[in-house]
Length: 312
Ligand SMILES: NC(=O)c1ccc[n+]([C@@H]2O[C@H](COP(=O)([O-])OP(=O)(O)OC[C@H]3O[C@@H](n4cnc5c(N)ncnc54)[C@H](OP(=O)(O)O)[C@@H]3O)[C@@H](O)[C@H]2O)c1
Image 1 (spheres, rainbow, N blue to C red):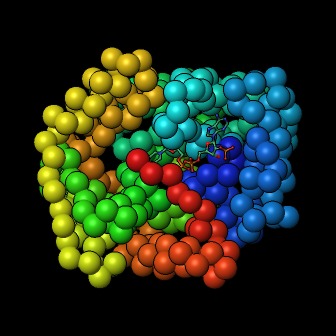
Image 2 (image 1 turned 135 degrees about the vertical axis):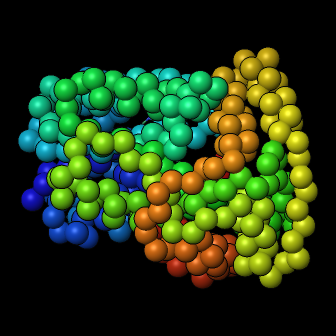
């Protein structure tokens, strides 16, 4: 059995990596959490919780004892001003790296972002993720740095917005190509690579099985809901202005988000090498079912993906 620590398992990406590791039967899984109640219900009893807070490094002591591999997708969605991305995504992950080195873990697997090195020049989100990736690469530990394109949980905002507003706004280039990825397809790939153990010290750009333009994804959201497609186009300049405004009012986290979007909405090719088989249309259909059930709360099924995914 491979002993793995998963940091971020209470979120979409890390949760799916934990699921894939557990169901492979090849891993003994320890998950880092701030609160045991946040562990997804389908993982309870199948993983060993370790309660700590990455922004308080002293609490991490012992996390990696006896561990072969650590995987981290710890990262913030940027809605509030505090804590800052630097505190959580950067210093939090570096604290995990320190603990991994102290405990002589073999391999650090980390989630950065597709085209991270290019994006880092313009977007602090990528600058931070790539800064952590650079520290891991320099640490002497073996590493796997994943560079995923968008995950389905984020793309799900299209369906929610189409239903709530009846209209979708596509900012920037509607022809940007992207192959979004289901979290479980990603998790299965991570588990497979770690278990195989033959791809050490590798950067892994990664995407899902189908390539769409941004406009095609918006149309798919309307089609799933059985609504006529109502798409409005916004110049990229609007996103740049929002970034400027956020910086002007001192909202650094919002600034980093808009700079990320500015890059993602203007880079023609946001596709990574294809893995997996789970299709976006099926994910949308399931989300649509869950949303209509949510109108009648007593009928909501308890399923792992029923957790409210964060929106961009
Ligand atoms: N989703 C995408 O499309 C995408 C694409 C490329 C890269 N990524 C990268 O992957 C990361 C994870 O994505 P995700 O979709 O899994 O996000 P998520 O569902 O929001 O999960 C984030 C994880 O980070 C933890 N976390 C957040 N704030 C924290 C804090 N202040 N202290 C300690 N832990 C904290 C969360 O723990 P709690 O449950 O305790 O809050 C959770 O386990 C992102 O931040 C991003 O950098 C994502």
